[in-house]
Length: 492
Image (cartoon, rainbow, N blue to C red; front, top):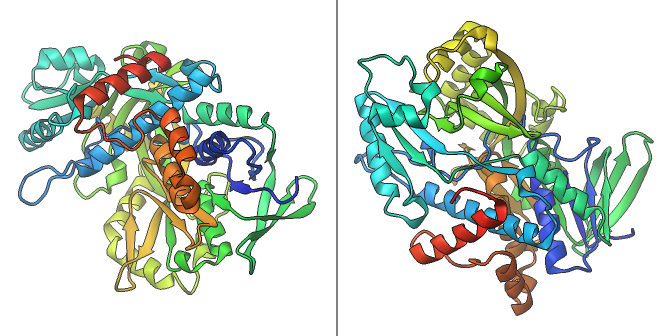
C-alpha cells in the first residue's frame, strides 16, 4: 500500500478501537498499523499487564474524593461510568455484526465492591453511596455494614476479621471483568482481513516529520530484516502506551512542548491455590493508605484470563526508568529535553512523597506484601501466592500556566492544531473508556466528517445512546443496559 489515509502506531486497544471505528465510518479508508513487538496487545492492553479491567467507577474510591467541606465529588465517577457504557454499546454492536463472535471471549459479569473499615472510612463510604445512587448509572448500588450481608458478598474477605472492627461495603451486581488483551487481538484479527488494512509487526517508527502540505512523512524499520521504508499519510494516531511520549517528541509539534512522563512499574500477587480462587468472585477495592498516590488503590480481584478464573492482589508499585515492559532503561533519560526539563524537575520536587512511596514499594519483602494482602484476606498464606510482574505506567507530566510541572493521573490526548496528529498519553482508566476517547480523537481530527449527517447517523447506529447522557435518564439507562447485557451475555 502506498500513502495510506491513516497510520496507527501501536497495536493496543486504542489503535484497534480507532481502526474499527474509522473503517465502519468510511469502508474505503486505507489504514496501516505498526507495532514494534511480534503480536498485538503485548504491553498495556494485555490482561496480565493491565491493572484495571472493566473500570466503571462502581468500586474505585479514588474517583470520588472527599472535599474539604465533607461532601463527595462524584463528577469523575459519573464521567467514567458514562464512558464505559459507551464502550459496552460499541462492543454490543460489534457482536451483533459478527465482528466479535463470542462475548465470553473477553467480558464476564463480576460484582464490583468497595470495602472499608474504621468509623471515618465507613462514614465516607455511606456518603459516597448516598451521592451516587441519586444517578441512574448507580441506582443499583447497595450499601451495607451488616456482617452477615458482607460475608455473603465477599466470604474470603470477611472470614476471621477482627471482632471489634467496624466495616462496610457497597455492592454493584452489574460490574464486569474485561480481558482487554483478548478483545484487542480479536479486533485486530478482524481488521487484518479487511480490504485496505495492512498490519505490520516487528516494525519500529524511526522518524516522524510533518511536511509543508500538512501530511506526515514516516520512516519505519522492520526489526527482523532491518529494512526501512517511508510512508506519507494525512493522519497519524499514536497509541503506543509508554512509547507514545518518545514518539510525540519525535513529531516535534508545538502542542507537545513541555510534556514529560514519570514511569511506574507494577506487580501483583497471584494466587496459585485453586481452592482459594473459587471462594472469591468479585472485584473488591479499598482505600489507598494515607500518603499513597491515587493509583495505589489496593484490590483483591477476580479476573477471567484465557477462560480461566484467576485471583490477583495489588497493585504493588515500583520505580523504573523504562517506559515499556519491553523497553529500555534509558527511556526516561532520553525523554528529557529542553522544553520539558523544567516541568519534569518541578513535578519531581512537588511529588517527593510519591518518590518515597515508590522506593518503599521497591524495598518490600514478601512478608510486607503479605501483610498488605491480609487486610483483604486475613487467612492468606504466603505459599499460596507468587509475585508477578505487571505492565508499566507512564504518568503524564505537563506544564501549568506558570511553566511548572504537574503530575496528571489519567488519560490525555494531545493533537496538533490541524488535526493531522493525535497522541494518547497516560494510564487509567484508558482501556475501559477507549471508545469515548477515540470518538473524541475523531471529533477533533476529522471535524467536518464527524459533523456530517452520514457520520452522525453511523455513530447512532453503533452507539444507540450516542450524544445522550444516561446519568439523568432512568428510562434510557435501563433500556441501554438491558440491550447490552443481552448481547454481551451479562448480568442485568
